[in-house]
Image (tube, rainbow, N blue to C red):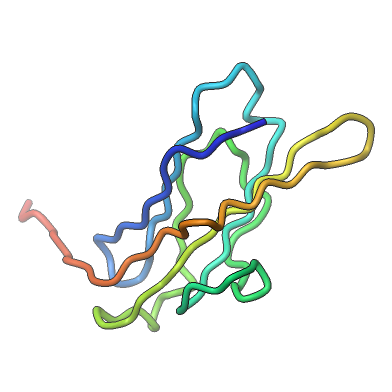
Length: 116
């Protein structure tokens, strides 16, 4: 079973937020698991309080760019994220892990674009 050690949200662009995660070291194949990313403007209690913004992402991918915030993002707006990880349990059954105890959130941002 996978265990999440880190979930963060960052941005350097007003047209997207980048959600990154890290799993605890495991002998399991991360490619056997898929991640769904959910977002909300308030820290809801369950996944039904969140909107699906990305799905079917391989767990061996360490990040997701949420471009659905394009045109909506503002420094005073708060976004909360949750991950749902689905993996095999054998046969055609799946197991789901919902990382929602401490959703990652971003409350403000700074755009830092170096001069080339």
